[in-house]
Length: 111
Length: 117
Image (tube, each protein chain N blue to C red):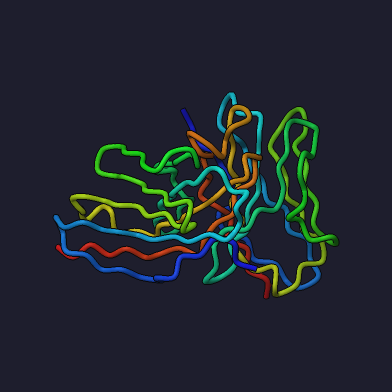
């Protein structure tokens, strides 16, 4: 039972343009959502999070949007840079110490 | 300030052997989490520990897997009598207190890649 879904396994975006990564969830008990970035042979690195009481959180080039009614969140990266090429994981928490991860989207930034 | 240290980075075991994976949390962090990533899948929660206590082991397989976080030394994930299906990347993460899944996320180590032959 995949409670957090990232339906796009891969995404290619031109350098300087906007990258939009999407994530859907089914568990209405989730109240925190996080995005992690992962390079090969490394562990995931925390990027940005959002509480379910908000619909937007911004940190530099990264913005996360949450649509609770649609059980959907997205990560926007603008402008996209070559160093952004990585696998991005969406994760969710019920407010306990356990994260449920999606399967990831591999983002490739084309110079 | 060293991050979360996991060793070994790569571990090869024959079927039936034991695998011991070690995790040293960041300095000052007393909460440790273990996750497993199977090929082509996301990370799956296994266990959450504080010093000398297992807080949540709801993701641990019922048999052959155990974890500990002693008062002194690293956290250990132990897999007895490994099978081919145990081949995966095992990630450890740490946080200084409760709330590791909210505002600041965990800090993950680089993982141990276990291959069972």
